[in-house]
Image 1 (cartoon, rainbow, N blue to C red):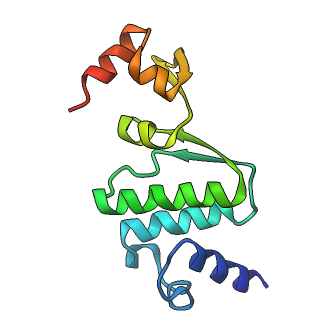
Image 2 (spheres, rainbow, N blue to C red):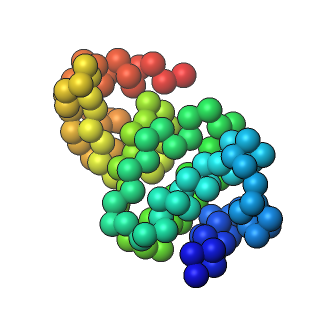
Image 3 (spheres, rainbow, N blue to C red):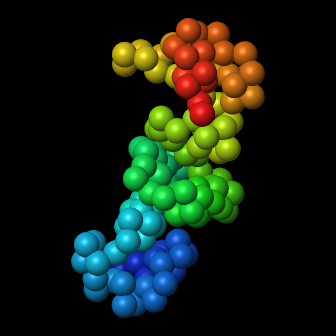
Length: 133
């Protein structure tokens, strides 16, 4: 049963030929596939909250978009909340409803995403937004 569930989750997150991939080592998978495997592992127990710590770091733009689409789809299907931890303001703008900005380990600002991007209050947040290319 565990093998069947693992195969189903790998298929659900878009791993091609999951029955073959199940027997491969991590170094045999691309970065995007490794990230999909980690998402499958995290979602196996159907959590109410997924903590995604830098889920797209070190992935190329195409794979990053695929991973974000996958997370959005999984969230929509299951209704789970996702806590994104990221330095990528593009990810925040695209996926988040609410944003908490931290500086030196302290929360300095919280707002809905539209408000934060249009009228940031804290100088650190303002600096972050000015640094967007």
